[in-house]
Amino acid sequence: QVQLVESGGGVVQPGGSLRLSCVASGFTFSDFGMQWVRQAPGKGLEWVAYIRDDGSNKKYADSVKGRFTISRDNSKSTVYLQLNSLRADDTAIYYCAKVFSGGMDVWGQGTTVTVSS
Amino acid sequence: NFMLTQPHSVSQSPGKTVTISCTRSSGSIASNFVQWYQQRPGSAPTTMIYEDNQRPSGVPDRFSASIDSSSNSASLTISGLKTEDEADYYCQCYDSNNQAFIFGGGTKLTVL
Image (tube, rainbow over all chains, first blue to last red; front, side, top):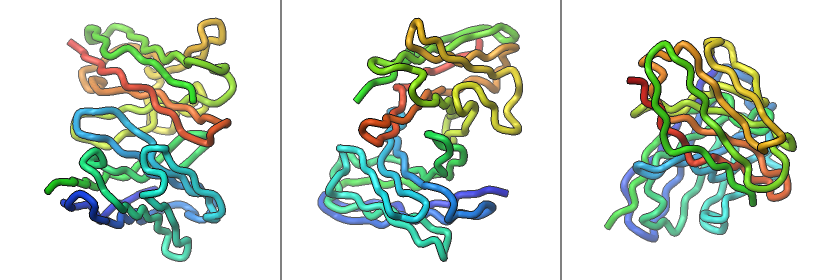
C-alpha cells in the first residue's frame, strides 16, 4: 500500500541543525511532487516546503526560507528536509506528504522536532 | 497571499448533519481546487476531499463538499454524524501567484 515514513526528528539546541527523511513506497515516487508540512504544539497545519517530481523546482514558506532545504533522491524514493539555524518556533511535528492536484493525498505519520536549550 | 478562514469550532449531535465553511479572503475560490483534511487527536492528517468535491477511495459518502462563488467559500458537509467524526478539519488550496500551499486555521468538530 501507499506509505510515507518519516525519520530524523529529535531534540536540538537553538541554532542547531537536523535532517529529516521520508521514505516512500507503494507508488512511483519519481512521478509526484512531495512536500513537508508542520504542526506546532496545539496549532494548525503550516506548509513548509515543496519539491517537484524531478527536483527542478523547490518552494518554501517565508518562515523557513534561507534556513531549510528540501531535496530528494528518486533512486531511493526518499525526500529530505535539511533544517538549519533552528529556532524555538520551529518546534513541531513535521509531516511529509505526496502532492496531488494542488493538495496532498497521502501523509506520513510525522516526526517530532524539539528546539530547546 | 490570500487567507482561508474557518470557524474555530462547531458541534452537533450524533446522526445530525454539520457544515464547515472555508472562506477565501481574496481571489476566486474557483481559481484553485480546495482540499479538506481530517485530523483526529494524536494522529496525522488524512485526506477527505480533493479537487473541491472528490472523495478518495475509502472515505464514506457521508462526507461531501462544494464551493460557492457567491460567498467565495468552500464547505464540507458531514451527514449522519458519528462520534468517530470528532476531529479537526482543515481546508487547503494552492496559491498560484506565490506557488504556496495555504491552509485554513482548522475547525474543531465536537460530536456530542
